[in-house]
Image 1: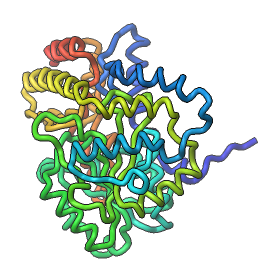
Image 2: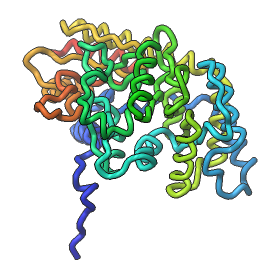
Image 3: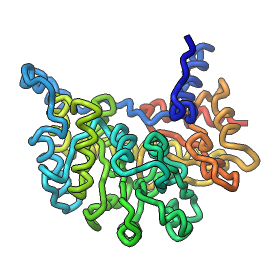
Image 4: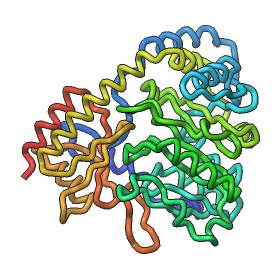
Length: 391
């Protein structure tokens, strides 16, 4: 029997982080224990108060059956209360919030709510792969906006051609930004919202890293407007809950309603005991402050280790990532490969794997590698020490 993949699946390459995992396994097969800065999966344990709430939730909901598609009333109210405390924005738990299985499924599936074949989605480049993959599976067309240091990693909306704007239905933004670690000032978010409303484009704001920052707290697009705006949030990084798969979308009630309609046809909702853990997480800021201190410490260790090689200072403002320029004359893959040498054995993600090739043949991710501050502080110190073996 001949098994033929769908055209959609055949059109996409390997997920970049799957390649990182392969590099780790190759080193381990050689008896080398690498220090993995490649995939952004926190290694810190989920906070105890979250775990305890989850345990209690298992018993509490032992006969509850399927969970709500859109999230429990208590969870949505907890999200609304947190949003009010954090951003000063009021949300209606019934019409302006929907629970998600983390943010990845929501990001990937959301284009199905809006995009017809041939419609254009405006996407940051480099950016989170599901922005593009979700667009392609919805039979839309991706138009990439470079994220480059010359523009402080802010997308240049004025560069979008008129014929592209005429077919654009959706714009993705991501601040604090992965992979650059840049934050967007409120004035830029105001500019983006005004731009989208002027051109009839829905704004999808991925704010999954809003709580990992090292200076002033990042702002939310919801502080500007809810009209035509949908925010995507997650507890994965804020509360080290990557394996719990819990997040939410919030904003314009019309967009939330569309997402709810889509979601009821895709999954059966977030488990109730997971929501109990999430409610506990949202009620506490002490563990988030502790995570921020730890990420800052690891950031500072690696920044100094990298600077000692004579490379540019690329200290990030936020997120768990460092978007490091590579040495002159080397590609991002060459530099990442050099760091995999047995005497260094650091796993990073080449920027070219995260970027998409533009029409002019350029790749905005080229010339960088991404480091995720997920190893322990002890291993981060070891990594900085190993960098001294660079030749």
